Amino acid sequence: MKLIVGLGNPGKEYENTRHNAGFRFLDAYAKSQNLTFTKEKFNGLYTDFIHNGEKVILLKPCKYMNLSGEVIKDYLEFYKISLPDLLIICDDLDTDSGKIKLKYKGSSGGHNGLKNIESHLKTNEYKRLKIGIGNKKDQNTIDYVIGKVPSEELEQINAVNNLAPSLINDYLDLPFDKVMNKYNKGVNS
Image (cartoon, rainbow, N blue to C red):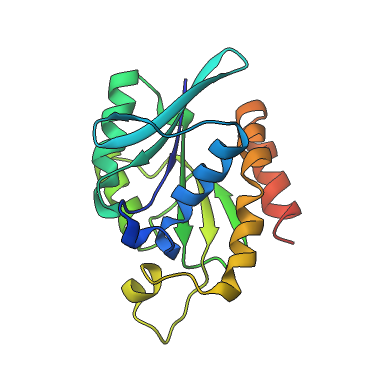
């Protein structure tokens, strides 16, 4: 069983913010597969499906970003999912807008959602897909990440979200090293 988590903040006021990159990426994948997030459990909105005989859960934690780890830990424990079968999708200030980066592990990089996940899982060794949102050094970080995405960035966001069907299907079908090699080099070069 696999758990794929898109990070974001719940509520209409956060829908079009940079911080909700994980939610939007999962939404793009779900739409491509005719899936809808209609189930709720442990403060998370989810959908599930069978891929090549294996159950896959797509999860959007409904607690705020900074409390995502609580929700994820509950899902991992309830469904007995091991850490190698977890993929976190989140925004990343250190990656240019329109770029992505896949990693096995790493620091939170100051991302409060990842800090909370690492606190609850007691490790930073989990797979992650980081979606670049750029970094406006002259702007307050919180204002930047929860600010609305301007129209000039929408094309970059749509290009990243268009990768959702192929990237997630590759993640489900291929060894993670091959997925990293394909998307970290092929997409970002």
